[in-house]
Amino acid sequence: MVEAILFASADPVTVAELEARMPHGSDPAEALVLLRRRYEGRGVRVVRVGDAWAIRTAPDLGFLMQKETVETRKLSRAAIETLAIIAYHQPCTRAEIEEIRGVAVSRGTVDQLLELEWIRFGRRRMTPGRPVTYVVTQGFLDHFGLESARDLPGLKELRAAGLLDNRPLPGGGLPSDDDAEAPEGQSELFED
Image 1 (cartoon, one colour):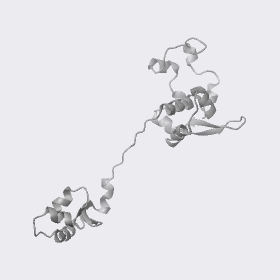
Image 2 (cartoon, rainbow, N blue to C red; image 1 turned 60 degrees about the horizontal axis):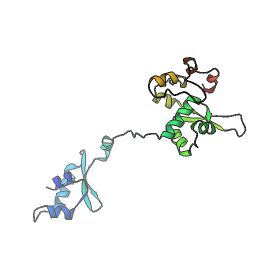
Image 3 (cartoon, rainbow, N blue to C red; image 1 turned 135 degrees about the vertical axis):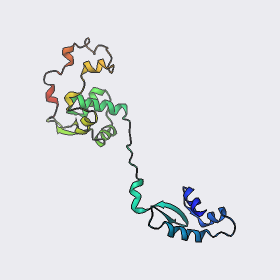
Image 4 (cartoon, rainbow, N blue to C red; image 1 turned 90 degrees about the vertical axis):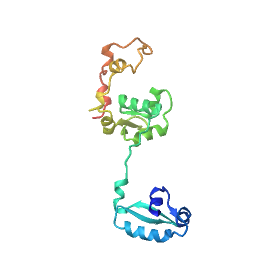
């Protein structure tokens, strides 16, 4: 009976609780001593936890009970926009990201992308204030199955996938297929 109670209980059970559940005249303390000897050297053990008793996995087999889980976190819209700007305009500074997004970039957004190891610090710009730049990492490329940042989809592919509106760009009409290709000098934006 003691064995059954310990096995079925998620929490450690005190001797008083065992006595309350068992028939009158039973000695749960003696049963615990016998169970402890019986389980010695086996995959589970009867162990004392404070004033209570429980059946637990043997310490040398604890590694079998570990379960590794992958925690999935959703990126905020701000983080996705910031990541896209860095990927398409790298190396770029915080000021350039803010100019493109039209709002200030919070420190937490950049910190989250740095923690995920999807972006890293690039070279400092040779302009007044020497601002730091951001570039995407190998981890980012690996996660999205890209060989290099040049393999990111262009405007034509994004429109075909329905991810961009076919609205005219501000100050002009729809870009032609020639405009969708990388403009001259864009290769200078990518760090090899």
